[in-house]
Image 1 (cartoon, helix red, strand yellow):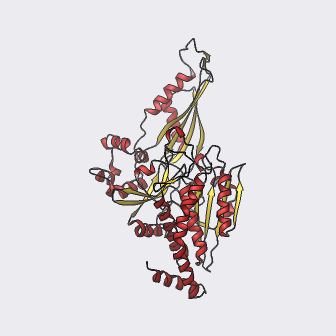
Image 2 (spheres, rainbow, N blue to C red):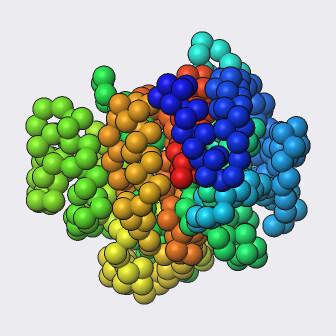
Image 3 (cartoon, rainbow, N blue to C red):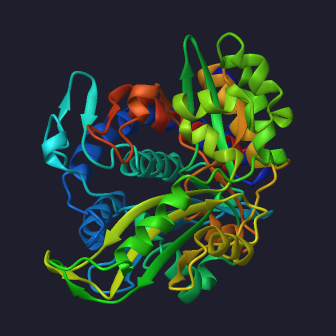
Length: 473
């Protein structure tokens, strides 16, 4: 869109709101001149943000809150902060609507905490924030400090533009998402529910542009598999390690875990998953195009399923319930046969699966009365519809910036969006970036980084999204 057209649009909006056309021209001129500065500024700000240790556990997100508060102070924007527990900080700010006809508010959300990183397997310091060779390096660059800075810089640019807003715009950074969000978004929903009374839409992590050769598809997360974290406890007769027993708590647990590991839960292709596979089918190679397009007809015996699990385990996991064995706890001494041992499972359920029925299914698989199953954590399923003005804006911006189509996506992982979907808030996972497979592999992996181009383009993209959704009549 040309600058003249932009000024004309802004002029008409402000005239409708009772302001002068000169004010409109000034606002657009400021926006055009300043947006590049906000975008470039995001690179250094992300570098500084990545250097702040907010690894969860223990989190210490208040360190990040202190830094983010300084940026809001510098912009002259009021904000609030709260600690849900010592060191577990959260921060939010609001740009209130300025037009008479107020629409449901928009919340921009990211989390401050990041997962641990083992320096032995990284080629650079995980919290370096180094800017080199066109990338910004550090744990959280993608998940989700990079998104948070892109949101913030667009939020600040919107504030500076002086353009009229037809809805409240919230920017929020929370604690503890990587451990379930109970000290962050979940705590705020429970203890500060009034904050979200007028919020109708939320943009969070969970989707982004993905590069397929020379083309890009923008994945927008609309629902998630449901996490069900379980703790198995096996009991048995204790004893001395020098005198092996016929059966112990350890041997019971090992047998149970072997049964679980060898179980392939039934394939069930839900409609949102089928739509996702169909949407990305054109970007696949060879026979996979047809296979993805017809995923609803896949059979458990198909060789394609085995190949998909090898090549793309994340996509394969969307077709069935899954359980990963992630933690084991045995004896505290090598020469003691323990009376009690534990294992923890990260199970992810399809959104229509009843959790209690699934736990009963696990009891049947284990088939041992000496092993109990305790539920550690679980969420409720929810789906955000795509027939909304915000989804249409995301599609328009994606086409303009990336020449890309939008694909509604089911996430195998979970985010804080489920807290807000439970409130009836339409929530999408959307990041204004385009990642190659190699770049995205750094999320929860080694050598996490984000390109400078992604941050600069991302700030501008997010601003244009806000302009279309918040400033447009």
